[in-house]
Image (cartoon, rainbow, N blue to C red):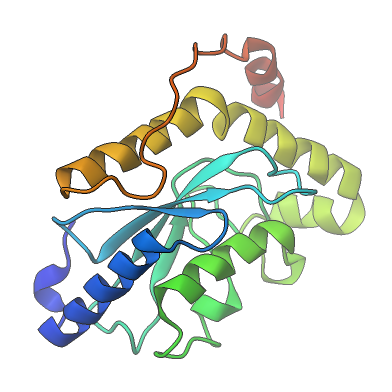
Length: 202
């Protein structure tokens, strides 16, 4: 739902400029999904960092800008299902940068980088997923295995390609290619039925 009418024009112009800059020169491992119809609802694709259970996955993340932005931080959500201590079952993200440590001058790039950093350094002390936090603290190997399983099922293959296609379509509708909008088509991998059965038992 668009919040454009509730944000002052000066802030909207600043957001537009930053989105164009980020689309032209995105941070490493982050690609914007450009939209002209609602710039207060920012969607990006974040590559899972190496040496984490999220490596190899592509995660769709949403930043929702409220009427108080940039005085108040954007709210962040994972649209891709993920097993993470700081991400609720509904996808809501808890990170200090987007809470008490927020400053108006930080901007959208900093917000996206803060979300990406959570994939590298999860924090069990500010948990939205108590089960993930407990495993992270007490049984790291089990946490890693569960998070990797979610990544394999929800953030790879067709899920990731669907996110990339959505980005390409949005960029084309906006009259530009967007970062890495063109991707080579590959045959779809067979569904990970065994992994889905495992997940249902978890």
